[in-house]
Image (cartoon, rainbow, N blue to C red; front, side):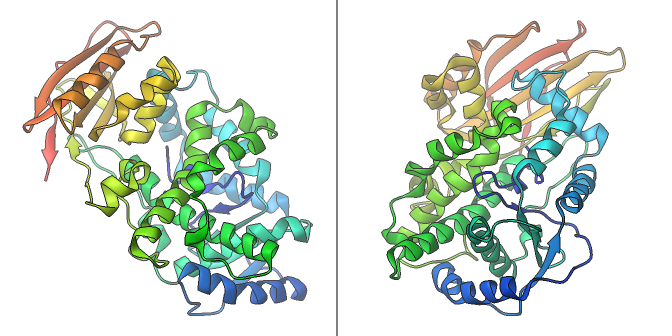
Length: 410
């Protein structure tokens, strides 16, 4: 949903956030020695050499919570988080009464025991954590530190903002970039732990594709955490996606290229992450960018891109797992939550598809989604010569804006 939402590790009990941390505190020399001992193996497994010393700092859990709260307020000020809640409630993916800020704050702080901050180039470790529990977290976060010495992590997951005719955000691109970042660190961590257990060097490519194994185990492990367990599926799924599908994406690309890489792992859509062989390795299928027009008399409250992955979640939540297939063939989408001066609120969602069959399959599935108290219309159309589908849901009031087809941004 947002950069910050995607910045929290669940299974790995770690986080990769940005925009500044607290002042550094002294670090246990034994911990520094442990970090130094881990680096050579991580350089080999990740394909990234250390270019400069890695800095560390200790944090109390209260300090970590205060930092996360500051970052949450910066990334998601009250107006924005309220607009996100309204939009996803209009899609039937969370309750309109949900206190989203409180839930995210609890969720972020429920499990975190360490994180790497790209802005301060520093690895933060929570005080009092058992060293054995800390080791896989250190491995994962040290990979982020190595990544950041080769690529600006902040720039990879930076959000775009637009006005009026342009989509307000780039959720799907951010999710895809986060999948490359976290997937790379996860795959390296799995290989490192395999080496620790076997006592010999492991080629990450020799590991089974993690996407086939991690999904159910992460869901099972995280079900023990109360806040995660009660979070809406859209939040649970998007938190896990970068680690599970991201690791599968990196494994597939590495296998095709025959060597570890990171700096050229730049997926631009979750479609590429979900279908790495067909949509990224064999031919890079770039998503189509749609600009939505704002009808006269209406104002955009929030807008973004769902992408294939969140479209899949939407279908599965309303129609069951079998309906997920209707998200395949996605080529681009954008939605606006619009409000009129009279208090009417409407969600308008446009998508374009690879071919007529994919558009028909999605439109047929979307037409079966319950409106949940608000009128909903699904229409087939053509945008820029591409098969398209519009979904319009009236959230409140009686008026619906005139249908204005989007344009394709070249």
